[in-house]
Amino acid sequence: MEMTTDYFFTISREMFERNREHPGQKHEAHEKSHTPQCVIQCKELFSSNMDGFKDTSPCLEISTSSERKTAHNNSGQLEGDGRVSLQDVIVCMKYGSWGPKIHAAVIEGHKIANLSIKRFITLKKSIVVIQEMSFENCSMKKYTQDSDLIVFAFSFAKGEDTHIHYDDKGQKQGVTSMEFDTLSLKVNSKG
Image (cartoon, rainbow, N blue to C red):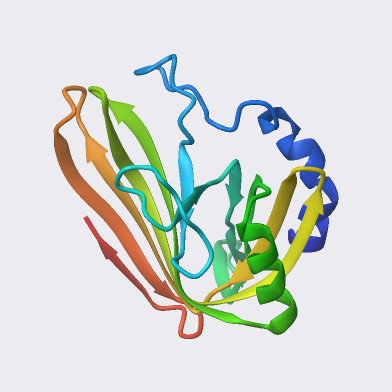
């Protein structure tokens, strides 16, 4: 079954209801924290007073998905049939000054040059980014508001998904990443 943004927007209220009161997730390393664990960054749309997170706003949930179709060959083995499906990136967040900006970008068909999503944790009383997804040449495609929540979707031409590894003492251990181009479907993996 291929997931479409229409399906996601239909069930978004149920999926995100649990975050209405407490947008930040608690992490075992810092149980009292209600700091948002995920932020979206784009100088054209967002702003923040959080140290180290300029041009960001907190996200409640994000959804990304890619899928390669497979089929059985004559010998009964599974193999890719060459078709790849990429779902739009879907973001749920509380309504703020960014709401009208995102809504206008959808209606106008405004392209966003760069947009990134950062996931972080509190480690040894410091905020560290453990994942960053960067997107280039983004097109805002859908916007919906339900009470104080907004959900929007965007497509992109190029992306990168980076994971930063830390040990239990809070020391950075390395980086694993993959860059991909949605037109050529070429991937460059590192780490």
